[in-house]
Length: 163
Image (cartoon, rainbow, N blue to C red; front, side, top):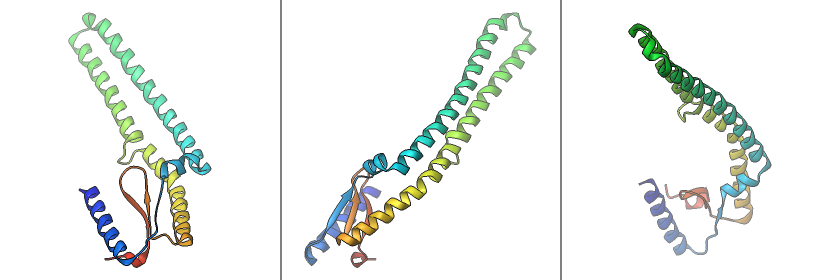
């Protein structure tokens, strides 16, 4: 729905621009910019290192759970029902610990990795947008779009604001 609205706005704006005369429209490929911009490369490297650390810890927790489960399976025939329940509760607690860890570290709703991504890339994205605005004004561009992903308007000349 959002894409349809943006495309509709684009076509309406294009029709208005066509009626008004020659317009300058450009695009950028944000993926290429991020892949070649040194601060973005450094930020991605830092983020990858943090993700690897979190993944290593999670993998250690999973290995510990698997080992505990294997031990339980080997010994459960010789355990009393109370001891079996106790071991099962311990296994469930370990599983919950893993889920909580994953939520805390990897979730897009408040996870540390997501927050770190925002922290590292916010100033980079701001600098890129500032540069796009400067270039657009210098080159007399009226609209600049991002080539990657969804239709995304990065810059629009205020003269064409129909709001």
